[in-house]
View 1 (cartoon, rainbow, N blue to C red):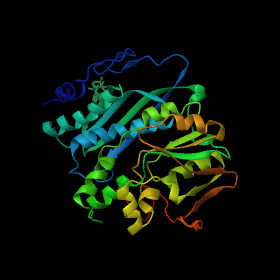
View 2: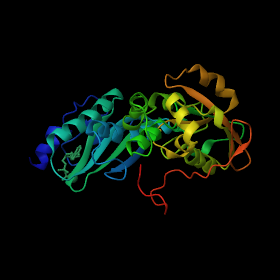
View 3: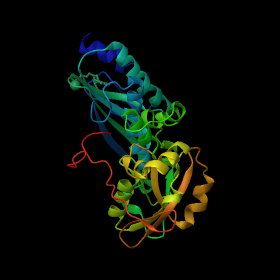
View 4: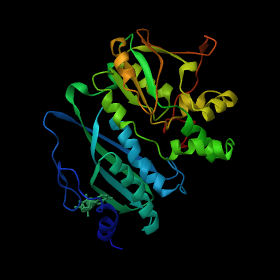
Length: 324
Ligand code: ADP
Ligand code: MG
């Protein structure tokens, strides 16, 4: 199969359904029409075999996740996704593998009406780079820098499930078949909180998506907003499986292992009523409050300070190398 057959067979098959795509795959560059008066939100994420995923991962999940993590970044800006590019290095043309990878990716693309408009393909060790574009009205963009003292801190969904599933898959901990089944989708097929991010426009002061763990990612909001926070362990939303895990192994999974792809955001008290009326299907929990004093204070179930030594996932930290 030639490179062009590969592109035609696998990547150019999504019908162009968006009116803002004047030219998609097939020319030297895509031609796109961003809506007048909105900001273009642009993000990219790189997934490297052996670093971000195990080499034997199900390609359908991989295609889903590669796009989902980018849509999650757009959601955290309050942006509505529109287009994406796919940069792929492949060791060989494995047609069944590519078929499953594309099915996972395009199923998710269809669910959010995002169009693949270009990319690049090369032989090499398996690396997947996706760049996604979305739109957000200038005044409505949700930045990390907007948190103010008094804001309530919220998270969508539940935290720690992907981490618990990963620990099981790596053989570091054993889950029953039912328990693994209850959390594995959170690891392999995260649902980007796109509708929730758009709904937060005009309500939230700041937002981030949790990819490196709550402590690290909330830490980015605190640093960029030059504020501090107090959060309560007993308010952190946990699934029953994660709750049981925390009882045995402590708080690292929901606080620091990441891969949650939930939104963490801050809302001024005047907007909390409107927020809670939104009734997100994924769930929504207030876990604490922004304070003027810098630093993150975590309070445990008995009201005592909890000292976290977790730093979140960092690819270049000395002691941790590529396990997520
Ligand atoms: P060029 O050599 O001009 O960069 P390519 O041969 O790399 O062109 O790509 C031809 C067309 O196919 C372009 O429109 C490009 O965006 C698209 N394309 C290439 N690889 C991919 C891919 N992995 N996913 C989507 N589109 C791709
Ligand atoms: Mg090219």
